[in-house]
Image (cartoon, rainbow, N blue to C red):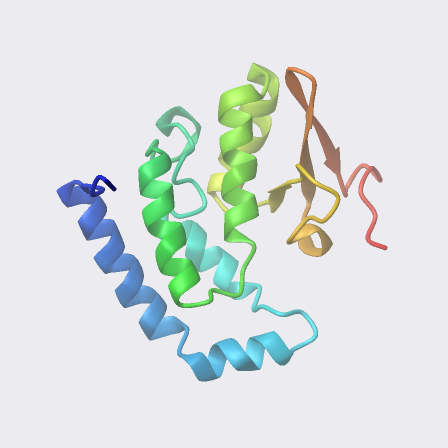
Length: 160
């Protein structure tokens, strides 16, 4: 027996708003155009994702985020997947979640506000193949009980 997932009114609103925005901004013709482009995305869309609060969805309010949970993130990811959003939103959200759960206080203070504001692109690098790494400013890498962060600006991150 599969129990039915029950979403709150707020999650239903998030789903409806995400669907409306994605349908408006990412018709399939634009998705195809971006997929065929060299970059694979439009960098100006990242700023819009920050303005919507999606980059800081799981980030605590004290660090500029919405402080929502995993179910809210799943609702948003389902809608972005449905519309084939050409953006590393998922690895960025996972990077933020990793920082929330396993980052040091100094790492959280330094990176979470910038991630939520769209000022930096951080992606979670839990495997050898990292989606969004080529455009990332920072890789969040699990190391033991904590996290290692490689930053492009410090020369710790290079694109092959």
